[in-house]
Image (spheres, rainbow, N blue to C red):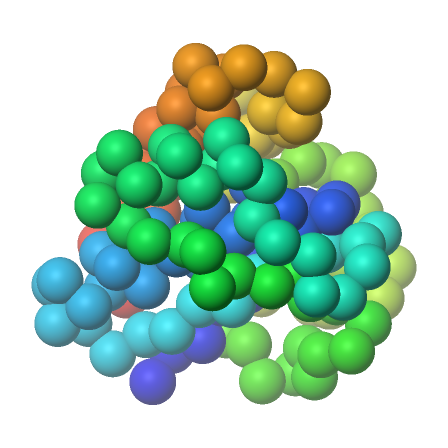
Length: 142
């Protein structure tokens, strides 16, 4: 089974949406892959942001159970692919010793996935749609 980690800053907006979208799409396509998410600067156990929850609910994905995770509590060696939302996230992951061949910047052609935090629901939906496009590309490569 392939294991994917999605990383952002607080693990309450972008990376949880990516985790839940990936797991849903992989399950729907019968692909043996599992995603997790984590934050580089978070508090363990935070809920998903309400706008992320609403954006996911709109496409049939429940997220009420989600709880944030701190990247420093994970065994990063068990992941086949680690996806960062921004170049800064990728740089931090490199500084943690993650080999470049295991790293991927999502939405690289557009400089990464913009942080929707502080935005309205439309901003979160745009983020969700960007994540879907990038996750579909990853899944097609598995």
